[in-house]
Image (tube, rainbow, N blue to C red; front, side, top):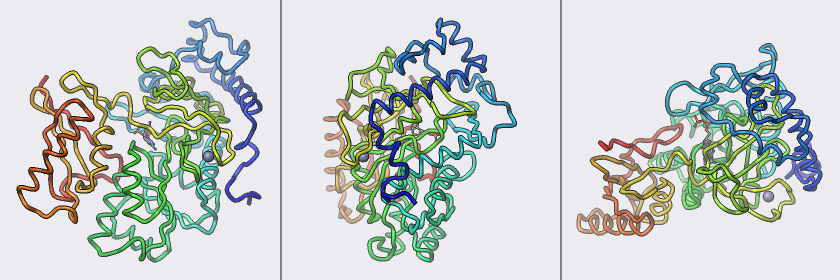
Length: 434
Ligand code: ADP
Ligand code: ZN
């Protein structure tokens, strides 16, 4: 056990910046040597006139082009593998939305290291071996199951690999084994909270839940607050992507003021998605990551499509690894209605701030260029009178217009009537005939 229970690897987590940057450079150089064996990268180095041995600073990486999700698909299944096949211990894939999946390989050291990074995350949120961790994410090719499981085992807490699945069974496990920590998507957290309400179970009194790791999809601060209130626990934002190990790339510490990115493992850049240039510190842009501690399949300057910004300054926890703000969406989530750029999270922020509004919503684009927001009512806050319903509908539409500059049609529907998934929620349905 580490000396300070809030730190798993205190020395590296609190490494002074110059030492941390020296470590980054050294690992980046090793990574470049490793990927030189991959024809895809060798070709890129040649085209850019880039000689790995001449790299003198981490910033020198910027001379290389980005790697994109399309590159991964074009090199499917194993074109980006950087080690002999027999060194691969595990395969994960990222579902994506269309076509072939992205295949990601892990060596033994990669799997172990990913678990170490997660152990750091568990530890900094105050999880100890006395905790009972119920992993309600899907096991299998999705990293949210297995990777998180391995991280929890490093800490030594008791792991219940429940996976997603019947809420009845989840509840039974929680009651019988005293679950204290769960791992869920924000949409499933709400679904489960509704289920508990229907069962007459009050999580504040009847369960031992203390913390939830919530991630896999973007959610707002307002949603976070609603989950905390509904389930009676502390929510910690957990960010990751299969391309970079899965969960554990960035995580909130006990101060919950941004997510620390493990910079001894990832070089982070935030770029203007349109130009590819770095944004000014603190400005929002697309997160670009380079894995510098991976054997089987490191990726250089990978465009995550996730939008965030850097938080300047040091964190009160003492960790020196920089923090990013909660992901506000993906650059490819944006949709355009009547010439206006809209992110689903803008809509979510407005809805979640209204007490009369429930927890699930769906954005529908249809007709020529019509925007409809379907949203569930919050049962206790609504008296069922039709006149009041229309008034509320108008109120929601007006608040959305003020935020978006487009007035949507608002459909208020009964609580529990919109579809829910245990995996990632699908929030936008585009059926436009443009
Ligand atoms: P897929 O690509 O199939 O969705 P991944 O599990 O690799 O599978 O998904 C990673 C993506 O999920 C990230 O790039 C990001 O868009 C989203 N994501 C993961 N964690 C968070 C989080 N905490 N906040 C916002 N988005 C997240
Ligand atoms: Zn911190």
